[in-house]
Image (cartoon, rainbow, N blue to C red; front, side):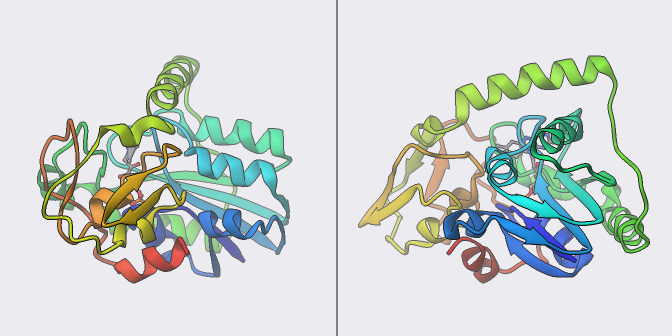
Length: 251
Ligand SMILES: Cc1cc2nc3c(=O)[nH]c(=O)nc-3n(C[C@H](O)[C@H](O)[C@H](O)COP(=O)(O)O)c2cc1C
């Protein structure tokens, strides 16, 4: 089994690791231009972004060829996944992937413009993440077939919000980032960026091809990178994932 993942703060990597099999980082596959894959089962794990699928994941699916008997996908999200998985089914259809199983898992929300991480962490217990994960891992292990689908109204709203989200954030989203004076040029931001969008020469410079995953902000050891409009300065990394794993996934 091959599992392709994209993660900024480790939630999706934690899920991918729990599912098991051979793990492949999507940003790495894109950078290495590796696009032909075959196995008895192939899966994708990634976060919900703007009620839809992150551009990087779509790009990878569109550029690649996959052969498998069983296709699955798990989308991690923090508050409302809405019709994100309908979006995935559509992309799958256009790229020749017919999913056998899709599911979503409610985890900590790392979206800094809307949520305070400290509030999110107090809700962690009530989200029953371990139980959700156990069910999903068991479903995949036993090759269950189940597609998560939302209704027409939810799908229509999700589509509109996703369009607005991508229009207002992709590429130029890094113009909303501020570097504080305590930045010591350690280059962690450069190393965790899945888009190679950051070059540190003394301080980080942004190249305006940003996918607004916020990995650079969450992983900055100095907490020196901020959003102009963030709800708090608290940051998040999934406790089951180490910074080195995020760096390795993007280099
Ligand atoms: C740019 C961005 C957009 C997001 N949009 C949504 C969303 O529409 N719905 C939601 O429930 N969570 C949303 N989130 C939260 C993430 O989906 C969630 O925290 C996810 O588990 C993070 O996964 P990761 O740690 O693997 O990056 C968003 C996060 C970011 C950074």
